[in-house]
Length: 370
Image (cartoon, rainbow, N blue to C red; front, top):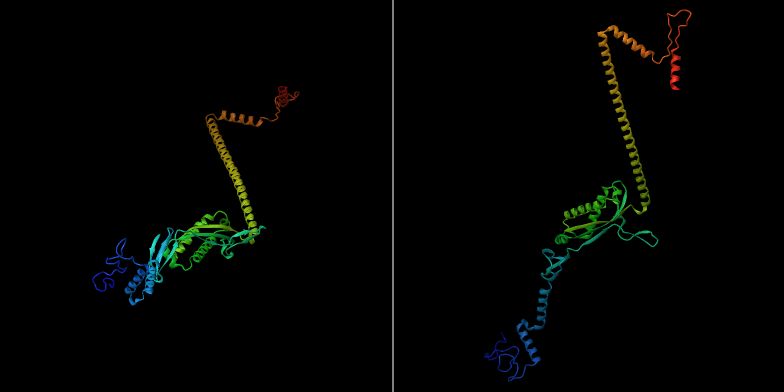
């Protein structure tokens, strides 16, 4: 190099100057004067001018330093633990990196997009109601058209809800959706309208909120997956679901009427069940009585038949005795309890052939009663 040898080519020419006979700057004692600062700087500039082409050392140094800084630090980036980065070369995907330091070719050759992939983001659909100092309700945000939805039973319900989401695939999120917030909001609103349209208004505003939220998560996630949105739906939260303010009083009246209708139906059903049970019990009692009467009648008939057979058998053995016995028993049954007067046909004409049996029995009963 130019400063390797001096003019006679015998001694090395130190670019920082000679301290007299030695091969470098002197330190401490010795025979020569210490180098001056101005001379040191001037010699350094002269040597750099000799190194750089054209001799324009100052400008070239600046250019080289800027180039080094541009290459070394222009592509340096840092990714936090909750983030991921995507490197793009002229807008085309090159690679995806995780947390830590990274480097890419400086802009405009390559660029980097860094997003928080674990951060939860929220989108609100519908309008929020607040009250002023006088207690009057008013809308604070969102549009009424977003929250008013038609139910299966042709009622209008005001549904306000939030969608909580985060980035699932950063590459899909950056390349497949031009406006992620607007896309997610449109999909969520469409999904909620579909669910509300399949349900009646009463469960929507009372007991079916949890079921509706779960179904909304499923539909929204499925739709976004079909779009390749790279988004994970974490929660759907129904903040408010009720009848619109303009028809709220009328809706409450309808609900009251429906409740009364249901109460009347329940009372009628209970009365019907009571009467049916009573009728069934009465029918069972009549059936049992009829069964008992039938059994008694059959048994009586069988007994009479057996008795007749027995009498007939006796009659067959002794007809005269049996006839007389039957006659006497029959007359006994006929005459028992009747007023009887006995006339003796063999009595003479001077005596009245009369025996007052009734009077005798009556006197006998009176004596016994005393």
